[in-house]
Every structure is written in structure tokens, then in C-alpha cells.
Amino acid sequence: MLSKKTKYGLKALTYIARSEGDAPVQVGEIAKSENIPQKFLESILLTLRKAGILGSKKGKHGGYYLRSEPSEVKMTDVMRVLEGPIAMVPCVSLNYYEKCDDCPDEHKCSVHKLMIEVRDSTLKVFRNTTLEDLALKDS
Image 1 (cartoon, rainbow, N blue to C red):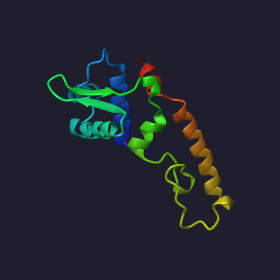
Image 2 (cartoon, rainbow, N blue to C red):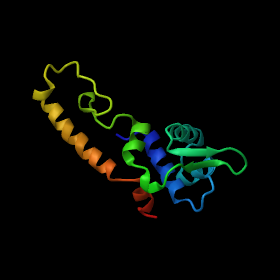
Image 3 (cartoon, one colour):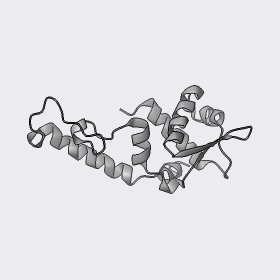
């Protein structure tokens, strides 16, 4: 299941991508518009800033802004920052691989084979979806 952190992060990024002009978007504005608890949102946006997806500006007219065009922000990057590994089990993870303790031979494991298919399908969707795609839906 998608965590609230990731769901709220995607909603916030979409809101920022849809915002008019180049002015940074204030946390309170996003929280109110998207019905996200402000303190939780601040933590999520900080994570996205540390990962280089967002930039921030302090002061009266401060807030958050995208560091790249929405068309350049791939969902694989966002999901890994907010959710962690995309693979459902560590033995099929491309970036966080770990051998399963209970599996003597992963090449003969039926779960391993199935999870590779799930991972590959999920990656295909995330790699082919950008923040621009989310921002254009229902806008």
C-alpha cells in the first residue's frame, strides 16, 4: 500500500507543478488546498528538498518550487525518495538488493519470479510517468 507520506508528497508536487508563475508556493497554501496536515507536509517537502527535487526560499514570499521542469521529474525518483525501494521484496530490488534468508536458491523460487514481473511492470509505469503527466490529469 502507498504510504500517506508518498500520497501527500505526490499531491503536493502536483499542486506545485500546477501553480502559476515562478513564485515559490507556501506550505500553508498547499496544506489547505490539498487537505494535508501542515507539520507532516513540512517534513515531506524537506525530504523532497534534500533529494534535490524541490528548492526552497525563505522569507515573507518564500516557499517551495520545483528545481526541474515537471516533464523532467520522473516518478521513479519521487517514489524512491518518499517510499524507498520500488520492489516488494529485497531479492528483486535493483537498488536495495538483499538475499532472502528463507530462500536457498532464488532462481528456483516462484515468489522471486513473480516479484520480478511485478517490479518490472511497476518500473515501466513509473519510468514512463512524469510530474507533468500527473499535473495534466484532471487539471
